[in-house]
Image (tube, rainbow, N blue to C red; front, side, top):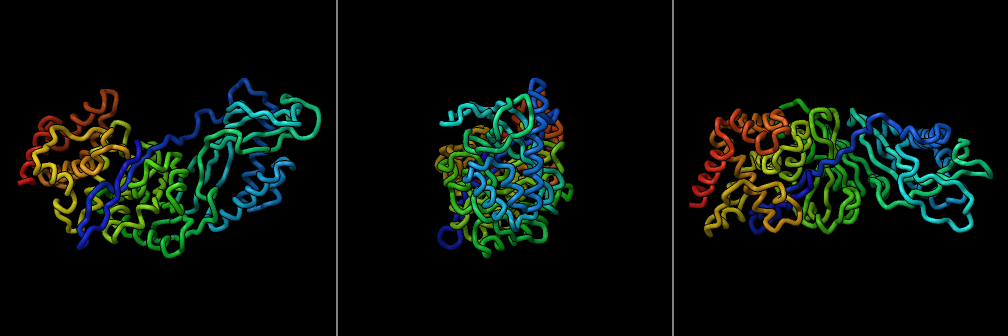
Length: 434
């Protein structure tokens, strides 16, 4: 799902200007079926390049700078330096597993190299898989685009052997990791791991909030999830955007984003919560607590969130959980929405998925409407009905379309379909505006 959420900011006497709080950005990072390059690739070349990748992986795990440098072309000094820097940046990170897998040998057009016209080169797409000890029961994967050059003289790509890494910048793309950006400081809490480029105090604050959020979320959504979180804390908005692989200008008002894979098949993964420092630093204590609980809800519910789960439900449920127990009133949680209602601007339908994009003009209202929809379910049927609805949407399947899945799930969990529920929600909105 696309990310989108505005921050809850402090205003006056701790009154929250309630916008949205964070976001989901679900990437398909699953392993490629079959686990290798196409059958047309020369087997000797595939084995030779994979052997270099295996040596690189072993060097990273051993934190062996010399072994890592030995996989790089001697003339590619900048690449050797960046490899050494990466090992230094990873010094505190509890890496439990690290592997590379060759995916393609001709993944992008190669730029010309002056003075090396006769050198054979390969434009590869590589999958990095890694696990953080104590937190990842399944690997997290990332894509890299690496150029290999055949070292020495003679021999074409079909003769195998002799390949060394020569560039990681010939293709724009690939996934940026936090350790690509600078030295990573690690703070581990009771149920959280914070990896950051920020000061120790800020990272400890994040860990404390994450540790508090885990039991709060489990109290609503149960304990059938990993009950642990990994948070990434970059230094600035530009780094935040690079980690997400997105234009940072679209995230200037988003406090945090949760990334991961959807569905029960990926239930073993611990997803990442990436914190936007530009917004996080403007939040008051309550805002930070709500944001962290909101994002932790996305982690807890990710295995029961499918492509057909409506954004109003996933974001509204996260907002509901985030604000639960804070003592905030609807007027404090949804001021923009209530202002619209009192001005006669009554929504006729639940917000669609596009309403939650970061560039949407009425983003605060979309999130407030979503929160209010979940509030209506809880007020009429209880909190267990909200959890049951969320699960029922996932179980309904998407073959009949998202609208059909929602209607079926609503009938099963609340006894009314989408039209009747929407009418109830609008009636509750009108009552709140009185």
